[in-house]
Length: 227
Image 1: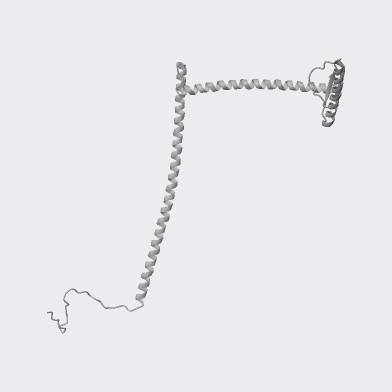
Image 2: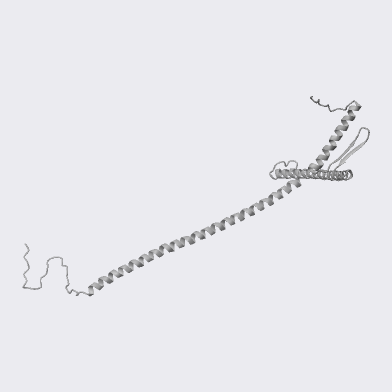
């Protein structure tokens, strides 16, 4: 037999309503007991019948469960109140920051020369002083940057000069060593030649180079006849 679906509305028949109440009450109490035992949960159940009769179940005791419930709801209310206060404080801070941002944007536009129509003479003079002070600060920073760049360039120049001098010394030192080596070799060759001539007899024969007809000092030698 198929069980029909019960509509969720008040049962008009008093007898049927009482029977349904008894069954559902016992089932609810049983489920509460099972939940407390199986899941080690603290359960408190209070039921009043249509006639005002009390039915209750508690894993510990109903007063303890009710006291714990009160503490929990009280802490929750405090937490909700604190959260509401935090939200209100955050809203106030946001509004204050928005106002500051608007003022900064307006000041920025005025410094750029925009939106000056609503400015008074004192405000314009104040803007002029701020701009002059800004220009002085910017120029001081520019000069500082120039000096730093000049110092770096001078340091680079000194490093390159030192490197150039070192390379020049290495080059001239190598040439000097080569000249010394060549001179020593020439002296060795001269020494060898002189040493070889001392071991042999020196020749006393002198030779002269004459241009033209030869002259004969001895009368016994006849001069050749030139045709």
